[in-house]
Amino acid sequence: MLDYRKTEDMERMKAEAVKRLKWPKIPGLNEAFAKGIVMVSDGTNGDVKLRNLTIYEKYMVTNFEKIQHAIVYHTILTETKFGKMLSMLFVGKYEDEWFMDEENFKKSYTQVYVENLDYPDCSEIGTIGIECTENGIIRTY
Image (cartoon, rainbow, N blue to C red; front, side):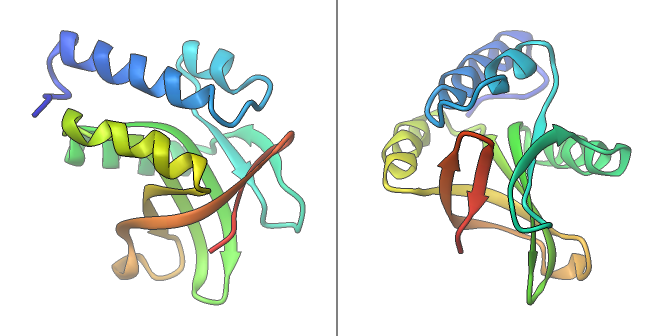
């Protein structure tokens, strides 16, 4: 198990995150993350657009990273019938699970932490369907 607080473990997790950001082939994602910027694919208005995280979204990402000893490399904001959801794509502390993430991504789904902004008690780690576009990542289910 990797420890988010150790520099060498953090560097390995960051390297894995950079590798994962190459899968969607979306211009600018890898470059932003290399500068320490986590982007959000905002699909709340029907079409997806990349933007920077708000202060509140940054707080949620940082809080999740500290609690789970993980690194969030991208987020997806979606309006659903269950409320507004911020899905956080992350590299977890269990390195032996990383190989599954690439296979899952190729099959159009990934493991995320979903923060339900309207009903926080319904927030959880789970799997979502995704679709990559040139403008960002869309949550499909």
